[in-house]
Length: 124
Image (tube, rainbow, N blue to C red; front, top):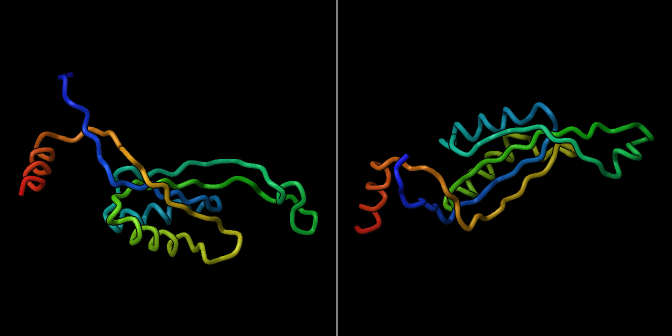
């Protein structure tokens, strides 16, 4: 592996959706439809809370969720957030919630041709 400088991306955001199990694929599909494919993932999580303990009408509530993480640029943030909200049907009570975390710095590998392209647009 050659020694290269670390490439940092700035002005990025992480959109996180915590939703009912099975809805994660619909959110990933909506992200891909917008052209966001890098930095997208879904994983399962299990948590606890007051609803698990008490439940509605004393019935135990399932606490397993899908957690979807989507990495986007700051410019795409609002458009992608709205699309994922609609795709996950988060306007329905009890489906889940989502939030945006601004990222100060993201490190990743970028091929030389992409770096040159970025450098050319910055100097123009």
